[in-house]
Amino acid sequence: MRFTATIAGSALFQSKKYEEQVRRMAAALRSDVSFVGQVSDVTTLLNTHNVLVSSNVTPEPFGQVLIQGMSSGLAVVATNIGGPIEITEGGVSGLLVEANSAESLADGLQQLSEVKSVRTGFVELGRQRAAAFVDEVTVPALDDAIQELHASVMRGRG
Image 1 (cartoon, one colour):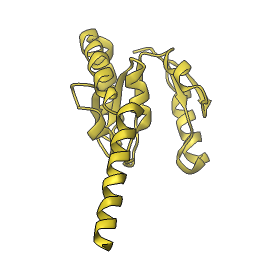
Image 2 (cartoon, rainbow, N blue to C red):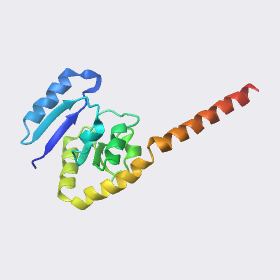
Image 3 (cartoon, rainbow, N blue to C red):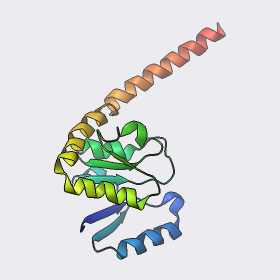
Image 4 (spheres, rainbow, N blue to C red):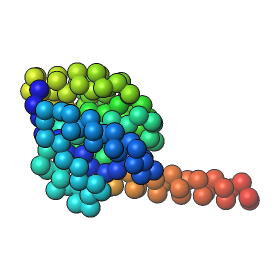
């Protein structure tokens, strides 16, 4: 399968060894892979792609990049650890693959490339799912929680 990929961001804790390993693996592919580093205009980058892959090997508590991808109309593929499990409803609004498994990731990407209806469904339902995490929803909910916590603390002091 030939494809074009963009790798944005950098390795956790700026690990040069890991970055060199990824660059070697990318060079061995029969596809075009570009490395763009940290990106300040994420939306413009996302608008030039159709699939977003977040292949974390260690859990992260919340994957903002997944929300950005879903909101931008990308099919999302993420590893099944940490926050992506809660954000990406596996098989519904995105695809969850096994962490630390190149084979699982490759199988998932193959499925998306072969079955357009799956990719289209992920895009539509991903946008709906991402809407639950936009600032207009989460900021008031967080504000309410903080006010409730404050009131509870104040009641406890009285």
